[in-house]
Length: 223
Image 1: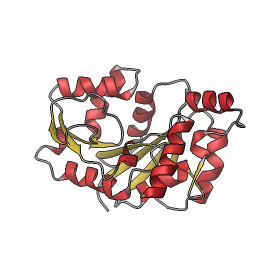
Image 2: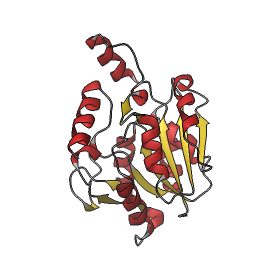
Image 3: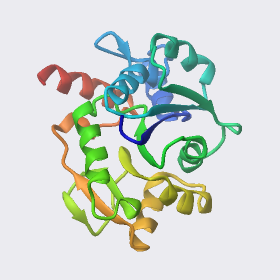
Image 4: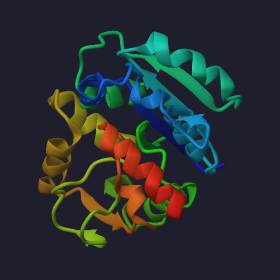
């Protein structure tokens, strides 16, 4: 196993999906419990992560943890650990930091739970790109959305990404914020970014709204 801890963030408010379902007259359901190929989004993402050669996988729960926790019983893997945000009303940066404080390795692979279409192959590429880089302790390998290779901008970037935990410990405690503004500050402070190409369009989709979910289903059917 590679010396890397996966972090799957599943602690959000589900606000945009709740709004969309209400507007469409569809009964409420948490976005991470919507199904893809007969499996909840949450567990599908986790299984993609666990299929990589990682040492452990930490799933961070917060809002709606009572709804999400039962489906995790279906994932049987000794590497899986579940942790909880003490304060549910925190930004993504603090959710990631909560996990970083609990990892057992020096490197982290950070994945959003609403990214079930990011393939195991791409996740492995993120890890290998980081570990094989010239400066793994000062490098972030990240799923590219525009340019690939060495990057000079973090504009539009987010999860998934892999890096040394010390980078996260350096920046996350300073900002209670979403991820992208913090990534921008990292690149401004000379953290090296390397963009890994996506394999297909669907890998770039996070399921935030109901239309996102429908598009993921459509694109996966084509794949």
